[in-house]
Length: 196
Image 1: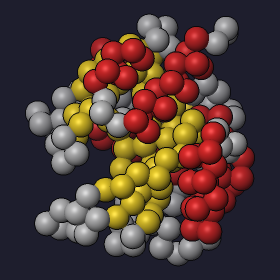
Image 2 (image 1 turned 180 degrees about the vertical axis):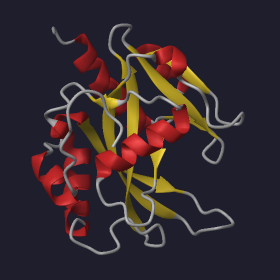
Image 3 (image 1 turned 45 degrees about the vertical axis):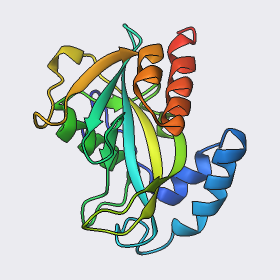
Image 4 (image 1 turned 135 degrees about the vertical axis):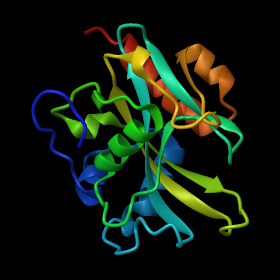
């Protein structure tokens, strides 16, 4: 796990979803829909029609900015994240690995409180994924975390086709075309605005 300070408990799916409180009817329905997957052996298997992914909206709290990445396949500005590698089953660990791989940031830590990881799970969103030459259309049950960095200037794209941009919440809302990401951004914005 990539983190600063002391060790961070990284809960499994069942524990994480049990501690998460959905907000609004869409997330409540998504939460109910995916709860049966938590004990399934293929919960992370990208060959199934609905499977988990883990992502992160990376924040720099002092400047109230968030980091978005251009995703070529989706042709959209999105958060970092993706599928678990073989053997990976802990959502936070997957989000941290993906964050490191896609940004080069080595100081990522759950936010707003690394000791309370369930608070870092800011949003659960079931999102459709269109078919590609490699796979049929399917859905991701995306577990979205907030991860903070203290070194935003060190962010580097993993390749030239995947640029990164630091944006305010308002700029990020305009940049993305995904309504579910706008909801994630709104939730991050409320936390960034909260008194310390």
